[in-house]
Each structure stands twice: as C-alpha cells, then as structure tokens.
Length: 227
Image (spheres, rainbow, N blue to C red):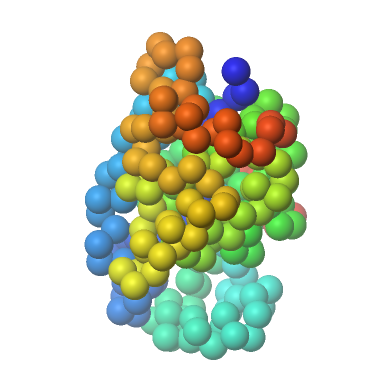
C-alpha cells in the first residue's frame, strides 16, 4: 500500500489567531474555528496511525520583497498594522499552538503559494516514501489549491480534507469544487485517514483513488534562510 502523509498548509498565527496580523487588519478568517478543530483531529489521527505529518509555513522578509508588487499592494493594510507580518522567526509566522509540530514532524518554509516551488517539499516527501497526500490548511483557494495542483503535476495522489480547510466564504466552496473536478479527492478528513491500527486507507479514499493517476524534535526545512 503506498505511503500516505498529511500535509498541513499555513495554519499559522498570522492567518488564524485573533491576534494575528490578518485579524488585526480586519482581513482574518472569522469562520475558521471548525477547520482548525478538524485539522487538530486529523493531525492526532495521523500521528496515532503512524502517518508522517508535514507542515508548511508561509514566511517572508519584512515588507515582503520576495513577493510580487500586486501581492504587496494587497497586503498593504496588513503591513500597516504589523510590519513584520509572517516574517522569519516571528510569532506571526509560527504554527498555531494547538496544531504545533511535534517531534518527528517536518516543517517546510516557503515564500510562494505553491509549497513545492523553490522548496525541498518534494524531496522530503519522496525521502519519506510518500505517494499519497491528505492536504488541509488555509487559504483553500490560494496556497492549498496551488499546492494541490502542483502535487498532482508531480504525480502524487492527492486528497483534500474539506472540513479542515478554510477561506473567505465566497471562495471556499468554488475552490473545493474546482479541486474535486480534476485534481483531488475532496472529502471530510475522517473519510481519508485510517483509524489507528487499520492497514488500509478509508473506503472513500480507496474508491476514488483508482480513477486517478497511478502512483507515482520536528525538522524545519527553510528556503535557504536562517529562521
């Protein structure tokens, strides 16, 4: 049976905490608590089942010089209240405490929406023997969807834990629908991750899988900077 890993995308203080930079700028995700709770349960189940848990963090330099001019313009209201939004080493860039990486987990830092671009994520997953990914995180229509599409292009089989993702309301369901059309199995996390002790993945996952492409202390993997 191909190895499965759980990939938690950008569930950081800056995006999700009430004191994070986006919330302070009035751009937070007010309905993200259910997704955070589902992600917490997914992570616990994955660890209990012996599945690798890999995190991504979107981290930038102060002011976001590595990002596009359009991104910096869109982020200007956030920089106005928190100049160190998602900066390397900042509290804003850390994973939420309740979802924090544990010993044996892997954290991959990125500065693009696609978590595979200019990072060691693919090499890390290949090194773990991973062929299947269960993806959760934020924002569904931005970094989650970008990473899911990129994973499929790299011949990973991909599933999205729909109840463990979050975005602004107008984008959430359209993004899930787009991913489910071509790029991934989309289902609640409990239908995608085996219960502890099971030797196979959940039925929903296995059934959809066969219609898709054939297989193809925590460690922090940075984009080349010192965290």
